[in-house]
Amino acid sequence: MLPDEYFDDFRREFWTDNRGVSWKFERRQEFVEPEDESWAASRRGQWHESLRILESRRKSIADYERRMARNGIEVRRVRVVEKPVSAYLLWELSSLDIRHRCGGKIRVVDGSHVAPFERDGPLPELFLIGDKVVYQVVYDESGTLQGAVKSTEVDAVRHWTAFVRHLYDLGEELDSYFEREVAGLIPHC
Image (cartoon, rainbow, N blue to C red):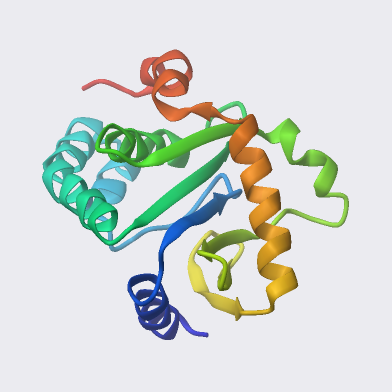
């Protein structure tokens, strides 16, 4: 699926007959998000502006988290972080920290936790919706979204759900990780 097809399909699957836990797994250390003003500001080195924009989103993020809860939906995210922490991850973890503090369920694992599973290449970026759908989200080498591959195959969904759940169980809550490993790295202007 191309990006627009993926977004439409995802919204339909996510908000229709979706109860319980969905999982997100993020492996890449760099992405390109040109549509995001905060990301663009961080790329220009304008961290004060980038963080201001992120903070301005807090209310809408909290509203979204409450909307999911009202609909019986919970998303648990696993974020792989390698050291040294990339500039992209400084920005993304700042964004995720706000989401986490608004009720998002986000944990961090070190790259060493996934290395044994990457003998044939990096693990895919995944979003699993309940027990019915797994999307492998596809990016080009620069980290620009290209689309997604959708599977409703029961064995594939079960496999990836068990894998991401295991990493989530091993992971550290984002807030403690962020305070210890990330907050001091963010450039202050």
